[in-house]
Structures are given as structure tokens and as C-alpha cells.
Length: 402
Image 1 (cartoon, helix red, strand yellow):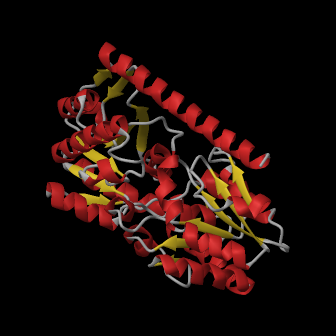
Image 2 (spheres, one colour):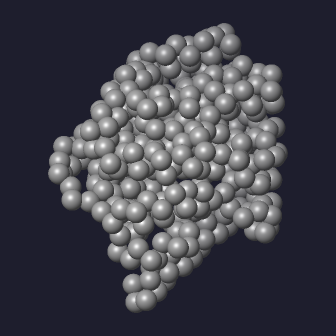
């Protein structure tokens, strides 16, 4: 049995790493051949029993991979870790819509292409039960839930970072480690409770990582509110190990957020740091409240839960240890290897499991138009990221000289 994962992004990007790279690692542990390809490669050879297209919609590129899978008799699986196949995505991705007309149109196109690929696939793989329910309603196809889990490499780096943590601290640091500015609304959702906590307790600091916009009103706390640029995932455990309480806010009014998984909880648990998270569907499915983490059902709960953890170091430590144990019980490569191999064995059976050696290979080549479009999009994203960083650093410099 051979499996091919094709992702919309390069393997180092978080979604491709978690939803393709980690599954490949689990399959390799079980002796299953599994390969990774990026949709942006000039050419990809397809001669597999199962082809998984992660976040690749039925656009011109997606159609080539669909046709290649059909031509070689492979089972076609659509994979996603976000609610990107429903119209709500275009409005709820976390950026101002429809004011940002360019991104709004781009997200609309993603919705239509993703829904079309979900319908075209033989089966779907998603990361939460909430997402699975929406996918089943949309397609009526078999939908399989493979929850996110950490890689052996991240686990090793995290253990080292956890061992270097200071056991005694004079101050408590709350940390929000955001991967992108699409979480502006999520941080803004808990801005009020965070400001109240900082006002009440001068021994509490706030660390905000990434390009997310800091809501107004935090400048009054001066150096107690710290910013740190986005870091590579291998550097993330060291940052996480430097905080005392991990924050995972998500605006619960957006169905898009209820589909999100518990990655922030897992990464903090790996370095034995407790998490306070929004009680969205994805987190509620995975985190045992008051034991492995604390879940805030309403905005007012954030104030209560944070005050409680700040005042009780013993509870912080107990929750952190239970979270760490839960991670090792159900969110490592070792835990997922056998179930994932069994899942793909069942998927391969849908194609008769004739074996890749008997399949005719098909090469998917990227067209000139697709190459040109990819260059334009990559340039646009590069300019947008650079502009975001310039704006952020300008804001930080202005705060420094204020």
C-alpha cells in the first residue's frame, strides 16, 4: 500500500505539517509507504493506492490531481482542518470582510473550490467531530476524524524546553502565541478580561507572539505587555516554556472557530504549561475541563479562570501535569500510528488494493498559467507579510518612544 499526500502549502507550513507530515510519520512507523508533495511543485508522480489532497480545491490544479488519481485507480481523499467548504468561511476567516475586497473574493473562490473537491472525493479526513458533522451534511460521503497530534521531533524539543523552565518565578506571564493576523478578533474578544487582570495584579505580565494586532488600552501597562515576532515551530517550545498560562481565545460567535482543533493546547501541554481556552466545539471535544485545562464558555469566564490560576500555583502545576499526561496518552505519533494505518488500509480497499506496482503512473505537471498565478500569489503574500511586519514594528517603536 502506498499513500500520497498533496498539500496546498509546503511541508513546513503548520497545516501541511500537522495534517500531512505527522500522518506520514505515523504511517512510516507502521511500515506503510507514504510520500509528500506540494501542489506548487513543477511535477508530481502519482502511482499510489490512496491520494490525499489537503486543502486543495477543485480549481485547475486540483482537477489535475483528481484526474491523475482517477487515471491510476487510486482512492481520492479530500482533507481539511478548517471550515473552508462553507460560505461562512468567506466572512469569518478573521480578516475584515467584505471591507477587504481582495481577500474576500479570494476566500469565496476557496469556498467554492473546496466544496467541489469535497463532493468529488471518495472520502474525507478532518480534524474535529464538529468539522466532520458539517462535512457529512455537505457531501453525504464517508468522513473520518483524525485529530491533530504532535510529532516526535516537537515532543523531543518540548521535553528539553520544559526541563529548562525556571521552577520559581517572581512574576506570572500570560502568553498568547498567534501564528497569523487572522486572529485579531480572537484576541480582541478577551481584551477586557486581560486588561482587568493586569490592572488588578501588577505581578502579571502578558506576552503576545506573532503579527496579531494588540487591542487598544494595553499601552498603559508599559513593559508588562511584551511583543515577540513570529518564530519557527522548532523555536516555539522555548517561548511556551517561558510562560505560566497559555491563552487560546477564539471568538465563539463564528462557526468557523468551532471547527478549529486543540493544537495550542497540545503544544503547551508538551512543555507542561496549562491552557485557558475558549469552549468552542473543537476544544470541548478534546480537553477535559478543570482537569487537563480550563474552558471559558462566556467572555466573563476568562476573568474568573485567569484570576483563579494566577492565585493558585498548585492548580496550575496539577493541570499542566494532567495535560502533559493526556498528550502522551492520545496525541503522539505512537498513539496514532496503528489507527491511522488501519484507516488507510480500509481506504485502500475501496480501490481493490491492487498495489502501487500494478498501477500506471501519471505525472501531474504544473501549467504555465498555474506557475504564473503561483508566482503572483506568492509575491502578494510576501508583500502582505512584509507590510504587516513593518506596521507592527512601527507601532512597537512608537510605543517605545511614547
